[in-house]
Image (cartoon, rainbow, N blue to C red; front, side, top):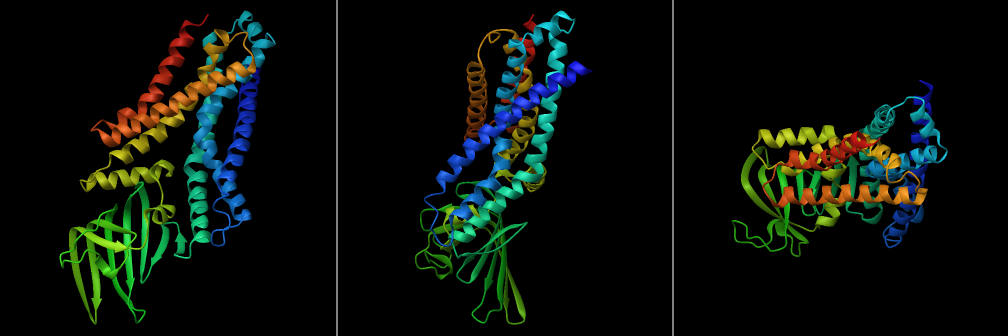
Length: 372
């Protein structure tokens, strides 16, 4: 229907303009934040500019619920000021009919969000982080789809993902001997940095002969294969302390954070941890919050309809933008609060991940139902 296409163009056009404005501001602030790193190692201002550009898809994904809300308020508000929405109502279109078309715009934006959040943003963000680390530090040697390889003396350490500021998962440790032959290969399901020295079974406070370690890493579910001549000696431990010069900051720069991983990767990690009886609440929350964020885009756009027909009928664009920012900030604050609740308390991560979107959906449907 021609009116449907007209509404879609008005809403989507305004949302794209708002996204462009937010991206310009976000890129400026992100580039300013790189000034302290420029000059460290070989990291230069073109590297910083590339880092900012590679971060833009992630910024669009993170801000899409807010920009969708603000853009739909501005787009529908412009139609209301021109009395076009009033004419649509007089011609027989109900509020629900208009809301349905606006919700379709939200579905299109959610599809855009899925494309960015699942296929473009995660690999680009990971690549940007790795390239920055490579430029600033000579200790990071190799990168690839399975994460970055970090050199620590005669060791090569690979970390598949990051689940906290000092907690990492999927750890692979390869040690090279003085004769440049492979000395050992070890795996651990997770690694946690410890600020206090950990005493090994032999009584040494610093394992692996590191005199001044930056951190003691407690490797959980540790399994090692050491090559001694023509023999292979296997060893395993529930928890193994490994002294290393790698700080959590350096190791974290080369690994993935659950909040920045695509849903399909989160699902695989979540199932693996569940099947092996390991803690997976943070991963469950990250997975469902990522899915719920896409659904929230539809209801964020739909929530603009009762606002425009109600309290913001005669308001200006600035007032509508402030309402959109307020709703979006409240959404993100609630999501962050619930994420901390999942990690600290024994709460249902799936339920809490859907709670902000559920509240947003309830508000959009209830207000639309009462709008006349």
